[in-house]
Image 1 (tube, rainbow, N blue to C red):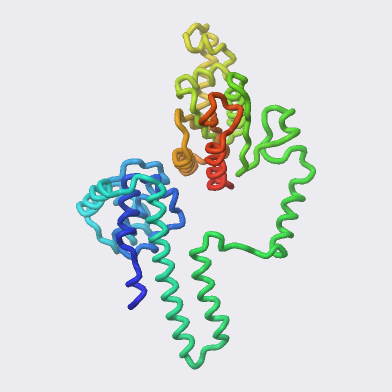
Image 2: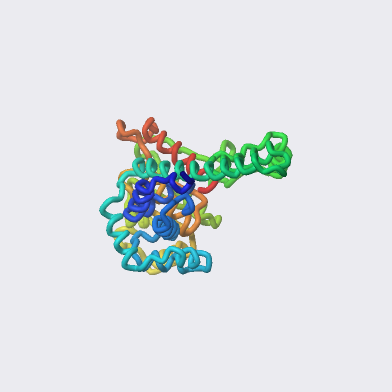
Length: 352
């Protein structure tokens, strides 16, 4: 038996089939690398689809995959070692669309199978190297040499591989604290000075506004969004109430200083029309995305957030709004939706 005998080609094929059908699934398997596959064809397709998903390419075909692998010297060399023809790629894509998993949970199980098999192969190889060290007469510091080989493997497959002692980080952390001292505001300030006395927007943090129905939650968030855009920040606004047409009416009314009803009906003067044009021109210079999503769920929010982050960059995510599934207003964030928020915040912490 050799390390190459340790594999789960069925799960590898399932991963590839799933990402062909759902390229966004690759955002849930960032720990999975092409060299974790034993089948070169599977590694080829997975790598290409992962990179295409980062570029927000939703349609996967043989041309897009071949083009991705030939886009630079490193990937071109990788693709040439596999030697898949466009016809073979098309066959794999057709098969994938038929056999791919259609839920994130099922996909994660397949990913775990592939990663576990890759870990076992790597560990098997390292243990064989340790055997050779044991029988080599000139081996010096055998215990340390074996420990290093095993440690490297464990760290490669451990998501929490970095765990420095506090003595090694305290000076750096204290330096960061001192660098922030003396500032009146830490983080990104809100538009409203009174609010900044209590909190500011911190990268990787979650801030909730709670209020009853028709008490100004959406207008508060719109004000925040515009202020953040004026500061040059990239903003994604997920909206469960207003489609993009209605939201744009409200946004233009806010920017141009014209009543919403007159924006919607077209009853405005030539001078006001010029202000509207100026507002639209300004919006085109901002990194801003508004998406209407009547129904929120963890998978959709996470996928959209990842796509926007990869395609335009993302500083702040605004969600308007999550509400308790058992209630008709948003005064209370219910346990289901607050749990969704916690998971999303954990996964994208340090980014938006």
